[in-house]
Length: 241
Image (cartoon, helix red, strand yellow):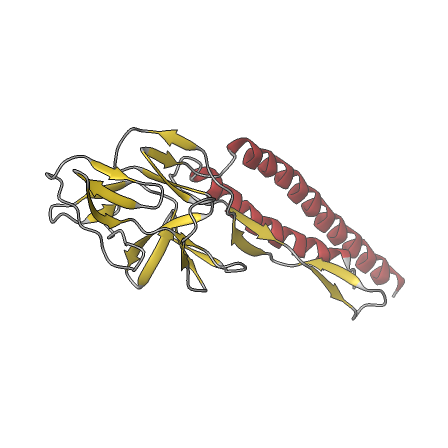
């Protein structure tokens, strides 16, 4: 059996998955706090043929943790995490972590995300703010003050080393290991009045898309060539019989 045919098919399958991630990244290039999705491929080697044959795996996706660009808004309820910290909010099934620090105060005085989820403090409790009690200040360590009074602290959390992150909606992530509160604010902290954008580089993603399309075309041509050569071999055997 021709080995080029299954090899080319495996390459097309892996490129199709990469195409999906690139399309999603480009679609969210302007989504606050969005983390780009990358794909890690491994080489699979089959030894059933006379010579070892290498196949491309379907690929394992992971979320990029590099920071996005900060934009000044001047809104006191817009927060950005510097360093590797994440904000936390109460999701349907437990804490969810995000770099999207756009917040608002609901009718009951609860601090929530723009999608209506309760923002959590370092202990995992929802935060409440009296919108009529004066200007709100948020320090680097997350401490919230109004009229010189400390009323709570926005939680900032770090992802454990090696944790796998699953996406929640657009900008949220859920780690497979418990996130840890940030206690050292020298290399991580909160900046008030700023919003972090997506960490997607649209120009780079479009360049990847073009290169991927060319590679897909090459693999497609290889498949078609393998089919033609197989057809010719079958015809030749038929004339010889």
